[in-house]
Image (cartoon, rainbow, N blue to C red; front, side):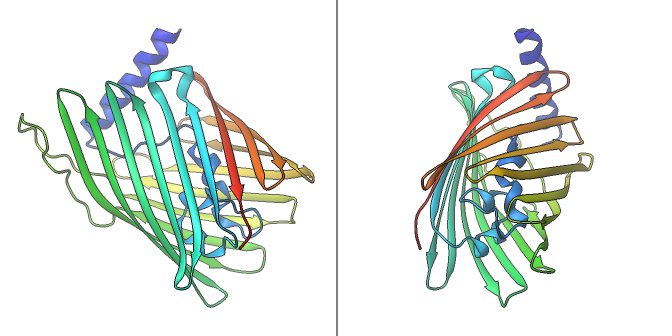
Length: 277
């Protein structure tokens, strides 16, 4: 079963290269950024879903997330994000890593967000992406993400995010003269509803270049003061995910997992820490 799962994952990767797509998502990526369209459920990783969410995060903090895709160490994925307040706006730094010693991908993002009055937040993030195959090739590129969140009411929020609006090709950094690859654009439109301080739901439509439309939906419910659950689904692959969060003082520990109908389970763990303003 493990060999079959690895083969399928490898085929997915080859398909991505054939389409020149250089965007990689962990199976549970919506889990870490699902609260981007909220004002009551934000945490240090929320802006990974939409950089403009930084403007509504009141306190600085740090979040770390790890996922073992399909239970295979070679397909592990890690992300870390930190945010802080500054006199000119909110700043955020994120780092993503996926792969293993024979193939790895990295993305570093520097984000900035600012509130334009009480109804509109805007965000901008610069990304540096690299992927590396030892003794074969190493490529890198710079991209940007433009985003905005509109607060339709105290509880209802919507937003848009555009990744790589100006299509660019990766730099040639290998001695074989392999043609540069085009990095895909990605558009996302989302909406979130804070029904109460205990219940939140959201939905997002994503369209990546040369790929079908993907819709994600999620809910979060806090049934005890320091315990909540979060669940969601991705329509493109039929993947569903579930997580439980436990408050530990100013820290929070989440245990999550997702299930893909063909290749199985991907467990994950998240730790966040927030400090006072």
